[in-house]
Length: 253
Image (cartoon, rainbow, N blue to C red; front, side, top):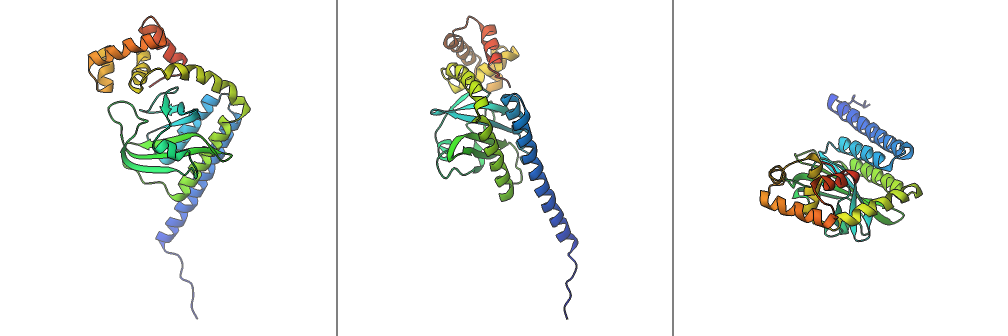
């Protein structure tokens, strides 16, 4: 006659971690669903949702981007990434992500096109399609500068479910007006090059040309040229007006 031996301490710890992980994933989805359903401002709800996704993955920075024609527009951002309102052409891995089967992309030790500043390199970049109704409506991007434990398959499934909740929120009728307002700012930002957008997002801080140049790793004279072009393209008289415009559009560092 054989008897079943009791589970080892290691097995018990692994079972506890698995149960804790399942509970954490459930809490995340419940919290995000509640925020997206109850928060009056879509912008605030997306910022809160992004923050929770970053905490769940222990990531440093991230963005929510929505698709509008042949480009993606940043609608929520955290960390050293493109600012809210910035436009990113749909190409490369982003284009692949939004085509069937619309599966998540997990890449390690790359230079991300979604970063700004002198450190575009990230140890991990996770891109998740905002898929709903068989279509891709945008991207949830999460990044870590330092080496982190790669997400498990259960973590990826949870984050993809979270991305679908975001897609549902941005496609709701209540968000139509905010999308129209974003198009106004997006049209102006589309006139700027990616580097000019990076300069514009720093202008509300009142930095000098030299300080902007130092932040972006460029020459002071180059920063001056970028600012002159920004003023011309936006049709504003001076740096103060450009900074006010950037603040109105929600651009920030």
